[in-house]
Structure formats: structure tokens, C-alpha cells
Length: 90
Image 1 (cartoon, one colour):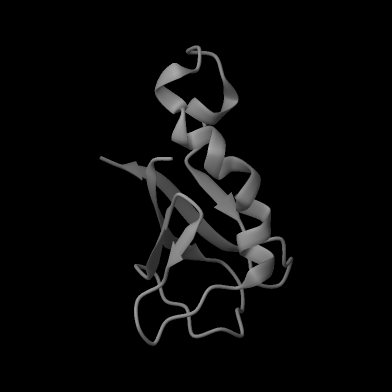
Image 2 (cartoon, helix red, strand yellow):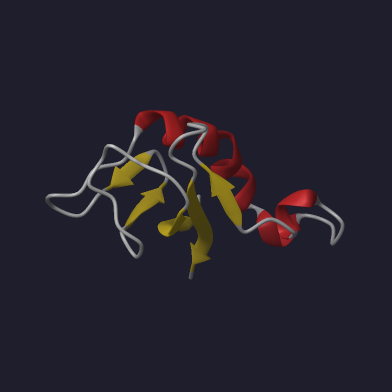
């Protein structure tokens, strides 16, 4: 599976984790790499997890596939509204 970088791009509400714009983590194969001292909300993570395998084969998808058009995912917490950017790292 491709290496995917997940970055905090915007926070439009309140998040009770110590997240800041620019914080990031990586997903590679079945591993989650979070920088020392950082955290990821499991609810935000679970909302993105179905997309990780699709991003890994992104080059094999047809041009109209929705994954090719989406770059951001939002935390499902309506009070947090943390926007994450997902990008495949070569």
C-alpha cells in the first residue's frame, strides 16, 4: 500500500485534542506513524480508514472516480470540524 500523509489543514471549531494546523501523521501498509508527542482522534481516523486502501491504488482508478476529486476529510464531530488533507507520498 502507498504511504499516505494525513495533515490537519483547518480547524473550524473546538477539538479537545492538542491538534494544530500543520500537524500530521502517516499511514503505510497497516501501520500508523504518529510523531512523538502528537495524537490522532480515533473517531476522525475511523472516518478516513475506508479511503486509505483506495488511495493506495489511486493510479489504477478511472479519471471520474470520486477519490481522485476529494482531498479533504472532516472529523465527524460537529463541534470540532477538523479538516484533514490526505495525500499519497511518493
